Image (cartoon, rainbow over all chains, first blue to last red; front, side, top):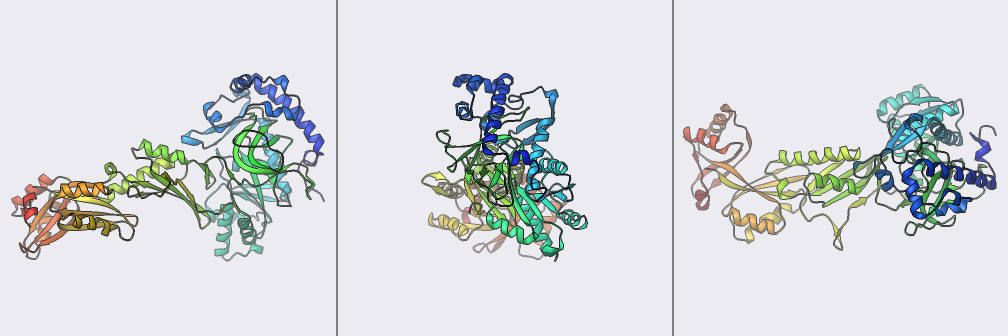
Length: 436
Length: 143
């Protein structure tokens, strides 16, 4: 079969060669970071580790971890490893308490990231002749830019649709004969429902595959999307801190995502002790980026819980596979593809003079995530007119929109009505059934 | 003279109003007038009671959110067009009526209208100059 791989020399590299390549790149990367990132050099010095101590992959465990808290502390330039003049791009993700995480890219970094996305597209059956319909959001979010670049690399005709405006999505999809759809799984389901409502049968569209990620989804959703659109649906994983989508991708087996091990080392650790766990154990996923020049993170803790397995895959790829994230080690929620922390909502309430008695309810209605925030009313915010009370709700809503990037529905409720269990308020109720 | 109105926040759920009225009746306080405004989400119960301070204290102790607002209670004679006349007087002076509700005192055989306006004093002056009587806190005790 031709065109099974985008870069077969890496994707099917024997395991021992991958390890040798990783070792060589790790030694180089640790040296690069130690010399150019004072923030990480200090962490290494505190641990008493020098670049010379890193000789094998096993030595990785000697190196200090980085977390989102480090990224916030070092914002914006503290983890930059090359002069700004060598950078050609930034991408960004929302972080806690409104502070964003900004990642920098050199042209090589962009190329590497786009190669990863191209591998995902080829693994989903994409070739030069395909029409790749990218409905991830374009902008600071990595979804649009990553798959767009990957599609160019494969040589597909790229439709830079961005998200939203479903009428136009459907029109272009049908008129231009889109064959591969890239978007969040919930948006894929929404597009599928829209086609169905309009009486367009699955075999009337030209789609053959979809590459869906940036939010948690289930096998049940996969089956739904596949039957609604008449396609095969593939998962893709990534994070802005490490590059973006494409850090790992699914192959035709549709059982776990291959991690691009020539560019990234994946570890699974015990989230409490930080000890690396053997392959096959469930734990927190940690990434070291081996080729990133501008923003090279070493041992970055993703907070995603998953299992890594290495074994012969029928697709012929030798890269280790990760399961879908099975949960989080923190309380982060992913709502409509956006990272939301309860602490952000708490910060808004405190800023606006409310006591932080609240409850977040997340659900999925008509394939779109909904976010309802229930806030206990206090006397100083109460008024005898409906207008004034609604104004309070709207003011909270717009402050939360600014903080989170998505619009919640705020409901003021009577004091002491928010459910408490053993004295501790239940902050989050997630009614979406995302983990099988 | 303005009188005190007690507003109580009520969630839009079964039994929310009964909980409030139960607390008031159990403490021996009389309700003179009542109105409810609501949205899909929540409601505001507005009441005129015989003892506002006591009612506010008890409701707050029970965990309800309350607010006392001065409102105008106007005596309306039992003849066609009397209420319209009062409202037109305010309208002509650009006084916006936020809300109003009526009640009847059976002992006096009179109708009254509670008016919520931005400036009670101006509204009261306009109405009394035109022959309308207003109700005082003392009157409320004796209705």
